[in-house]
Image (cartoon, rainbow, N blue to C red; front, side, top):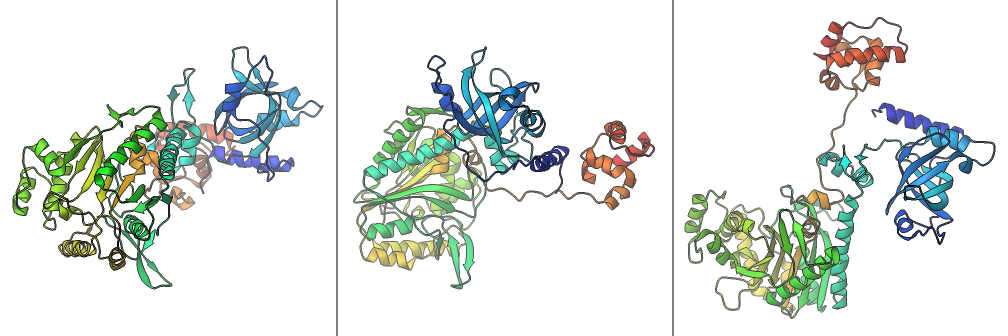
Length: 571
């Protein structure tokens, strides 16, 4: 493992603390009786409350290290200024705890437990006067330096998405506003859960590993169960299991569950995502549209205190009723072409005319879906129900009660993106079997997203499923909208990423191969050149100048290389 100078120094401080008999990672609990936010909100100097504060947090800054110093401590609720004074920390003759531990062995990022009392500084800032402190954790890696001016504006922030998503723990420490996204996400879920619980619907759990991938048109992840010696799929949807529970006699069931789809990744798709699905007996898709409007309106109010909120350059309003358009009607609205009575080849011709990428495996329904995605979705800014899909696009949906060739299905679009998908559920087992057989034909044509035959689900329908409506809502995407984020990675604590590249330190032979004498290798490493690649990217003049200073620091008894020699190392 390559350690920089700061990391080496922090490890040395850890050892020094242990030599002093101070455990930098103590096992015992530290009693906390207040938070920074609570103190700042409720302290009253005239009442003299908060006289015996016990608080823990991370050291984020220190100003002045004479006989007194101000610092900032950050806990889960925010930051508060704390005041250390040597004679209060060390009232006896021994001043080690202040002069050595506080002044020399603490670093930004260390976690402290403090005791003291609240007061107001001369400039009016509520602070804590520390009477004692305890190291609860010695941080061995330095935090990124994030500078904030007096108005709270951030400079030199920790903003690289690659680092932020890969090291979310650091992101949450130095960018505390990121926490608000996940607090709102939790509020979205808890609000939905309270709505469902009030209606008496049951929260359930269904299998993640399934013998048949079903419930959606998507590519699954496949694995193998050694004991059963059989293939299993990570679920792409939980729909077919939730419907089995409706067959079993529950009037309403719901699940907030992880889904997994082995497909492309982009700013709005992650291979692992969270979806809400719920199913209610004796309802249809028209009832579900009304229910969806109610849910989203309550969620918006819970998060923002009102139904409208910004998403990018748009102001979205979740107050119902939402516009309702048939999928073919929406295509005609935005292209001027009515596809209703066209053949598959005629529809394919329009795809080619409009430059839409297609292949021979696509039937008419899939072509319509591609046209809709290319020509319509971007126009659907305010919440819009797209309804009445072709039967081929919806193998789990009941046929339309009055429109031949269509099904009772809707998708909800917001800001040009799909948010929800819902049906009047197909409960005729004969019809369902024929739909599955049609899916098998599509699979034979090369459609990798076609559904498989699920005989057990068909058997459950043969026992009788009441008329039912069901819906799936993407929690990640809903959170993106309600927190005004355009990237799904921002609303996932730990988004999927490529493996982190490991940096292998250069060997002595590697340095010597580019002309560096062995005696100068420690100096180059101390300057941060642990790899030949890093050395080759350096400015030769700077390397030469810094080498002179490092020669003195390391007391290297050798003649300084010439500028030409250093240029040869770097070139």
